[in-house]
Length: 154
Image 1 (spheres, rainbow, N blue to C red):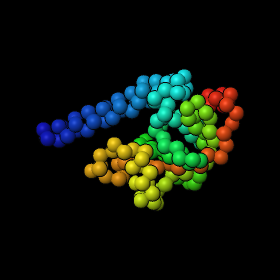
Image 2 (cartoon, one colour):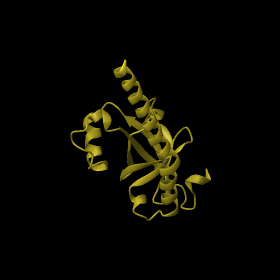
Image 3 (cartoon, rainbow, N blue to C red):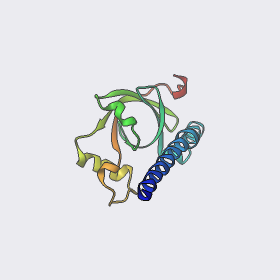
Image 4 (cartoon, rainbow, N blue to C red):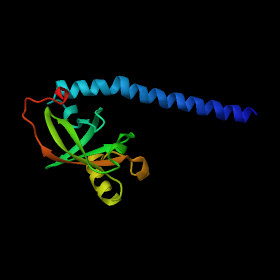
């Protein structure tokens, strides 16, 4: 009986901890990052973090890698599921410039994902299992609106 109570207590504590981490990221950390990349587009953080507007209308900061007309994002949360049914239109804010493109999640090419993540996330521990390394979103940029347009204006 004591062992069972201990296990239940540990599960409750873990659930509270996970909720606390999620809440901190969503309500404290993410708003600060968003504010910084909008107000300081030439800053160090803006060279690594984009603001992506998802098909649902939600905007999320995420690390990115841009190569020509492709932008790669590694997603650790569940929002990658918005792209499960195929490519969707998104909007990005990268270094003060609004970009539009077609985004898709890569679920069936682990070698491609590993290659991109080696540049996008070079500090991820090698021992970490691939299933914990997030999902890869590939965005093909198709439109760059005028420089005066802002992601928050839409």
